[in-house]
Image (cartoon, rainbow, N blue to C red; front, side):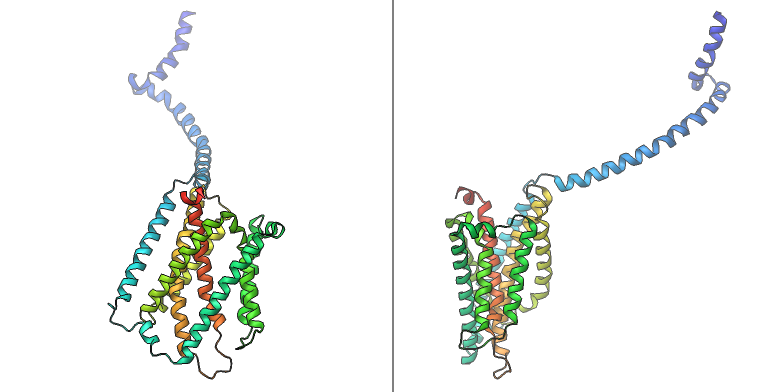
Length: 342
């Protein structure tokens, strides 16, 4: 019995101690190693692949839901500060006459009367559009019933309002202009600017003091950039239309993407920074471009054309630039510590 127990135990001992006993015992272990180990290896491969796939998918989800750490906002503020420094430097450079080229303001001294009238009428309609937008927003903010309907309940409603404003703008630009009378073009311009004011009416919930500050800051930005465009050479900023168009596509994509991602996540915070800070820089560049485009069109438009010069279409660019600059300044102020105290 004891011998049988020892016999029974010997194969186990031999197999366990095979690496230290010798080659003969290792030979008896080969069938076990060659059968068991590959089976375990092949059986573990699907589980390893599944684990890797699960880890990758989990990582992608975590990337979209990672909490924001404020780095995107810091980068946006730094880019905005750099753009402001460049703008101030350009104003000093061109305003002091350090450029060798003839500036647009110097060319304006040689304009004939009809060119001056075109530029003046363009900025007059620009002022009318801004006043109509502000009046419409204030009037709707004082009517709770209409105010509740103008607040979109979902991203579908927001996109619908954006599409409605775009359609009204296209209609306004397609109506022919008539001089000296209150025609369909002028009414379409008032309707478009009033509709945009109605869409912006929910911004009055940010507070009157904050919006007044945003309006003053917008006036300073628009005035400063207009001076830069006027002092710079007449076609200096007309060459940046292509890069501005590409940047506009990026800002629009970021604005739409921000509807689907919360700003408290890293991805949502990055999209918000692109839409807000990047959009402010972008539309500041558009204001430089559109200001010089107004002067260029006023100079080169024929004197006796089939259709008269259209100052409303010419003012559409700087009008939309100003509105977008105001919106982004108000958003920045509302998210700052001063805006929260208000």
